Image (cartoon, rainbow, N blue to C red; front, side, top):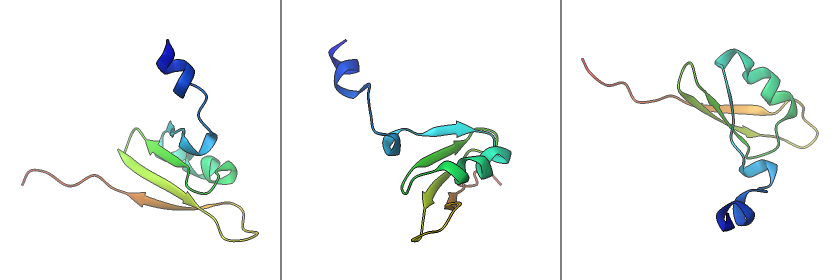
Length: 69
C-alpha cells in the first residue's frame, strides 16, 4: 500500500505507454519529450523527442537483439 502511495501517481513522462507498432504514430502526436512507448507486437522500445515548436514528436526506436542463427 505504501509503495502505491509513493509511486502510484507518477508524472506522465515516467509512465511507459504500450500498444502495437501500428499505433506509434498516434503516440507521437501526444507524446512529451522523453516519454517511452513499448510496441508489444514487434518488441521495440521507442523514445519521444521534440524540437522547439515541432509536432508530432520524433520517435527513436530500439529493436531487440537478434538471437539464434
